[in-house]
Amino acid sequence: MGKGEKGLSYNLLMLLAKSFGGAAVVQVLELLPSFGYWKDLVHLLAMPGCPSAIADKCVALLSELLRADEDELAKATAEARTATLSLVAK
Image 1 (cartoon, rainbow, N blue to C red):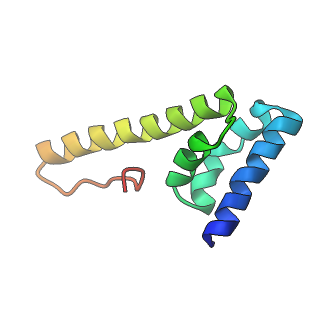
Image 2: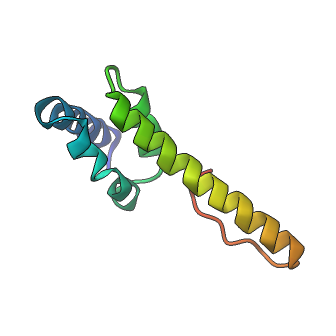
């Protein structure tokens, strides 16, 4: 997907939030990285006027996965194996 198309999707999500409320967008945020990448959540956070419900969910999703990666890294180090990490920190 090109950068213009990504920007369009962010704008559409903000329009949905304005029209139907942030809760409607929050329900689909977990799907966003599956169709794009994790940085899409960061881009949404940077959108002017991003509703707090959306911002809070983006931060929660990112921090949850970063914590899981931290736990996996610690376990892998203790077990002397290669860690299997998500792409959230990429």
